Image (tube, rainbow, N blue to C red; front, side, top):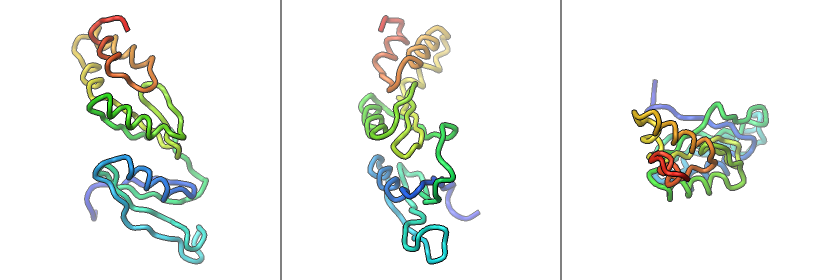
Length: 161
């Protein structure tokens, strides 16, 4: 196998370049790489973008303009682990613009790609060895769209929300 690790290929219907630029704008350690255009006689219009290589948050991707045959669904999602509420708010706001907010920190962006915006403190609370604390924080999470660390912490500590 050549290369370093894996590259995730994301299939778009004509919006690969737009999507690549959008994702690169959101994350540190990101950038656009090679852009390949369809040649004459290829499945796409000659000269239009076929693929865009990009890195987002240090992860390698290729965005492919493959047509309408395939779309994203929730079976695949990207999880963004956030240090604090400011990061949660930032990613939730930017990724849900033109998309669809979902439950429990999940959303779909304007391209239909699913994301989980997860505060790191939630992962610590939900794994607590005290089953009652873990249950309370889980119940609080299940009632939310965008996750709110202060409300989760209150549930974890046993305080009324």
